[in-house]
Amino acid sequence: MAGSDTPRRLARDIGWPSPVTIEVDGRPLEAFPGESLATALLADGQRAFRVTPSGSLRGPLCNMGVCFDCVVLVAGLGEVRACMTAVCKGLSVSTGLRGDGRG
Image 1: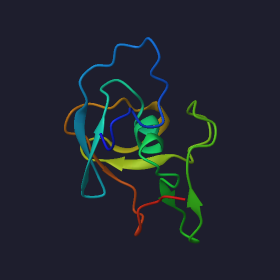
Image 2 (image 1 turned 90 degrees about the horizontal axis):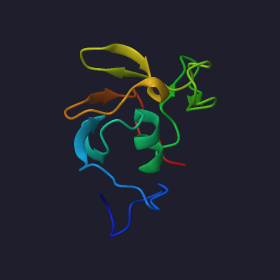
Image 3 (image 1 turned 135 degrees about the vertical axis):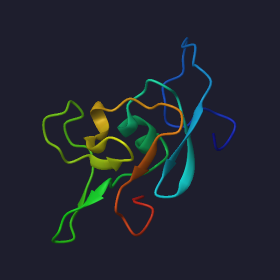
């Protein structure tokens, strides 16, 4: 993980499992197994997860699987809601964004 601290995650009195590497838009990202994909992307600073056909950026809104704004493409699974998909080693994610989605 970038930096010396666990970025953007509450870490008090929590025993974290060893991070695993997933791929997001062709770049490696370390995340914790079992956390939601949305959590991993948000902790990495990514705010947009997809772009609509009209060009609007979308990211997690409800974080409980209702709104579908966090839909991403996961190899082998198809389109999934990032907030409802658990991180596991080797996950390959495509957001369809041209930039890094930060902001």
